[in-house]
Structures are given as structure tokens and as C-alpha cells.
Image (cartoon, rainbow, N blue to C red; front, side, top):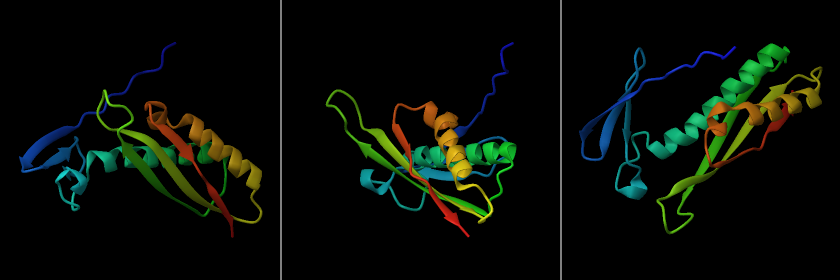
Length: 146
């Protein structure tokens, strides 16, 4: 039996210059625009930042789902992600060629570190946002035992 498909709607409205407003039903409006490297400003979310943030957020959501299902006890999760935008060939425009996600997971001394590492490897395999992209996505986790 096929699993149901889900759809997610967003709206973008130009608000002037190199800026706009991103919205979705029942969610706060987000100011978006062109990054400074392309003539925009630093005070709005750029498509480049949103792309990297989508991977970072999906990695966290995937971790939380797997950790919950696996009953992994942890006290903290945070992560930083860095995406590289570059021209990879002369025929097309720039692409986010690589995203490195660096989660930092804090566990207690009674938690099996190897199990936590296996769960983080599953996160890298199962994040649907990174699986939907042609960019290389690499997970570089750090596990802290507290």
C-alpha cells in the first residue's frame, strides 16, 4: 500500500528592492531577500541560508524522531551547518555544492556512546531534505558525555 503524500505550501511576496516576505498557512511571516554578496542586506533570510537551514532543521527533526523511537536518552542537541555556494561549471549557475552539518549531542555517562553514534549515522542516511538534494551533505557529529 502506498504511503500518503504530503504537500507544503509557501507564498513569497516582493516587498521592494531585493526583499520579500515568505509565508505559509498558520506560520509567522519571514523577511527574505538577496544576501549581501549579491547586493542585498544581512538583516533578512536569503535563499542560501534557508537551503542550509532546511538541511540543518531536517537533521535535527530526523534525529529527534529516531532518538525518540529508539528511547535514546540525551540532555542536549545543537548543530551548526555551513553551506558552500559556488560555480561548479561554466554552463549553469551557482549551486550549493556542499553542506556540512555539525551536531553536538550531549549524553549521560550511562548511555551507550556506540548506540548514539549509530543513531546519528541513521540521521545522515534518512534526512529527507538532504536526500532530495544533489548537494553533498556531510554529517560531522560530536558526542559529549556529561
